[in-house]
Length: 205
Length: 224
Image 1 (cartoon, each protein chain N blue to C red):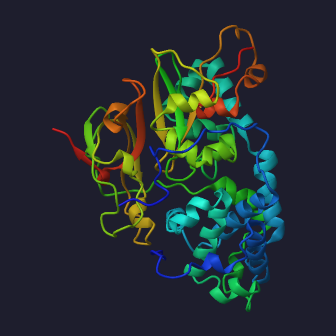
Image 2: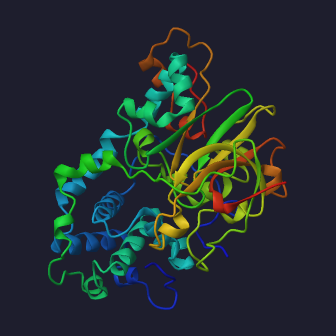
Image 3: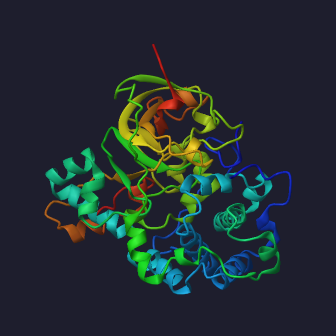
């Protein structure tokens, strides 16, 4: 049972101090014990490096921009809607989509760890997991947005979603003007990962 | 009452540094740390709340000086020993002493896609009926685990004893305060609660800004 280990040296301190060597040592021991299949590790890495990433989320956003029925269903209960597109799995079991408007800008953080919608956006970027983002996003979201070069109109309220449970949030950015007639693939190119976290706006065409 | 991971609202951190979208991993060993951690999770010796709490129980000095995947690796090493999967001697020597009775649970390459796609839903049936509705005013209680001093909780310190309103009902979910200590799922109603920035901070950036947190029913009290 987990408990406070501060009264004695924690097990991790027995490993080499260099981080790459620490991870290597763990991998070696676990492989020798028959607890890890090295081929499975390659497959996990390949999944998040090459197969699951923010283009999944961008497709959801583009569909929401193009199809009012899809958009309404997504905002009502996102989990089955994105699962129908094949976007379900680890760290995306309970999805909520939140829509930016002229009145409200949404932004997502996990102040306690690094919760993030993996099936839609992949592995979170370094900055999302940084102390600076975790500490500042809830108290001064507008200053954080300024770090990304974003300034919101004074009439727009900021709503920061702190992912404290197993619910994962996807921001639907506002559709830029001048995109009438664009198809799904063209619209997807306007939707960055950061726009779906809420630290950027959709790109202008 | 707080631990080092509970950093929401803290002063003193520098700028947030954006990075390009195609930069998934910065170092080769980051990939390995992620993959080894996920593969070990499949051994079924802990749940996500146990593993989160193990990271939170790192010495605050270590937690602060470690990079993100160093925290993962350290948490994993502690978990493996805590759960009896590896021994301290094995970590110190860097070599396995005998095989493991858990060998049959090893995540095989041909199962990876299936396991990642299956996920691990956190909603569970519960006998506890929801006492709040969307629109209700609520107040958060003091942050901290109600049963175990210093135990796991998902009510951040910055959001304690604050008044807000329920904006969504998520159904009944596993209570991390119980699950992290292997005391059972103890599922209960979970809500998204919006709290005004001016309720949370002495110097809010804007009068209309708010923070929304996902909070379990036992974290909340009604506001008359």
